[in-house]
Amino acid sequence: MIITYTAKYTKINSGYMGQLVEWPEVITEGSTLEECREMLQDVLNEMILAYRQQGNEIPIGGGLLEQIPVEVGHVSQTT
Image 1 (cartoon, rainbow, N blue to C red):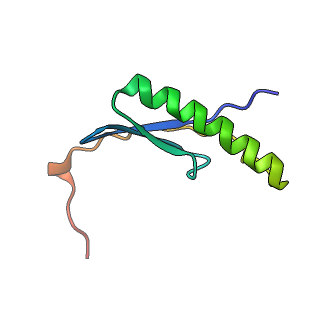
Image 2: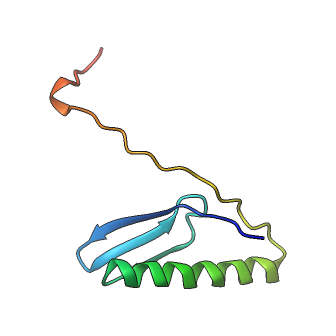
């Protein structure tokens, strides 16, 4: 069975931080985006093994990230 997870990458001072949206405990860092991707895959595999060993249910993937554009100058404060 193949489950698809949604990875979120954030640029940080030391490189990149990667985290799964549907499983926030799966998080890692890498000096490059490619290294971070590889490390995120490794940590995901380790988490799956740990969850199976503990008898925990593995979170379901399939999330969707969407960017929402907004013109900041047109946003006004409401009372």
